Length: 302
Length: 283
Image (cartoon, rainbow over all chains, first blue to last red):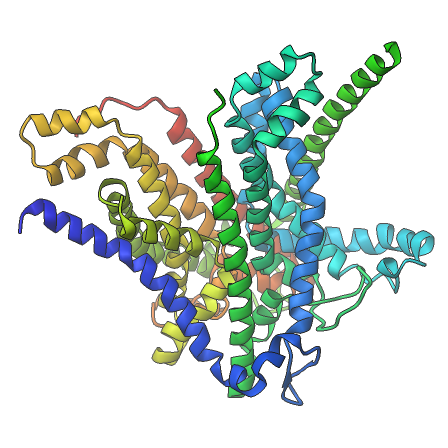
């Protein structure tokens, strides 16, 4: 065999390790969660009760917590992230561009556990003493703002997650907006559009699928985020309409209870939650990948 | 008509203003976090912090020497595993990976990159910790390497694709075999971009906590044994942050400051690598 072929096979076999790992992760979680799947069947993700002492394991509170906290984060981070991207691409003077982009990237580089630490000692007390009492007093009739101000809870988790996914959404949206050809902008301006009208009618529609992709990637990150959420959400497996109530997410229950899980069924239920989390993030990332890749296929503005 | 014109102007201004406000709002958390980290963390950063062991509850002082060394060791293990896979896999993708295998590897790497780190933690628990029967630094390193792998792989591929074809053709025209061209010309030309990617991956895994929870577990004592539980800086910060003791919480802030220092230095280094103009390749 020639050296070229050897190199090809060696590199191919190293590259295949990634594929094997991905399959291995799926299979491992399926095998380990089999006792729970076998016992609870399809009731597992639909049951509200999580009581390890009674041997009752339902994943619904965690699925609810994960989905709601992530959507909350997305609702806050999306307008801000898009605003940052528009500012960086369309408005920012060239001299500031690099610095601001670097600062946003720095926000992405901060480890999750440090967000959690900051959340516990600054964000949570601030919410408990300032924001939540005010909301409860003035908006308390709305079920979203009921209950005592714990500080920890869904609201704190959503806020921390929003800060964490903001740089992802901002930097991907910026990349997307930068691929919009200048012809598009010039055409809109030539028709008499103001700068905002140009952004709204020419720039944003052109990058639409990429911007959706940025959302999905941010969502994927928020769904799987563990440490910061575990530290501020309060870890109570309950479904409450109030944003100020403690809750739990799939990642946080695994992080909290995995090492103390006694008994095969308990451990296997936690693996099952891991499997549900893996499936949801897989689907979201699949969507993101498809959307982001599709910008490459757009007509290149002629 | 005049009125509509003014309206459009006003909307234009207010939207530009909104974008500016969004940027300011986005930077506020960064400013707040760095301020709090510096204010709370700086007071107990001293030589002891880097050279001493954690103190029991109630005794002030002490350091995180074991956790700092532990993090370095586990990141080292992760790099040793992920580097060959990422580099050679990336080489495969850029040079031979046009067909279905390449697409499969690309897809797998992108999906692996999106898997929550806690899921990787429980996978390694089932894959390494259960068969061996105990938590170990080795398992922690393996978990980190799985996070690092797809990042290096895709970055290496992209950097290799940037190498102009003329360079390969020139090498081939001189009679250099293809494999030697790849290893000695293409790889060497792209080295700056590849190293940048590695630094960014290091910055990312140095701060990972979730995959270490059920693999390296953490350790309050001095240990350099790879088959035993080992302390890590992010784990130690987590344990101290959720503890009820004032001294420990203080240590958590200092640990966080050290960790962010490591991450920022790695990020700055990678930026600097990009900015410095490429020196002439003579490899």
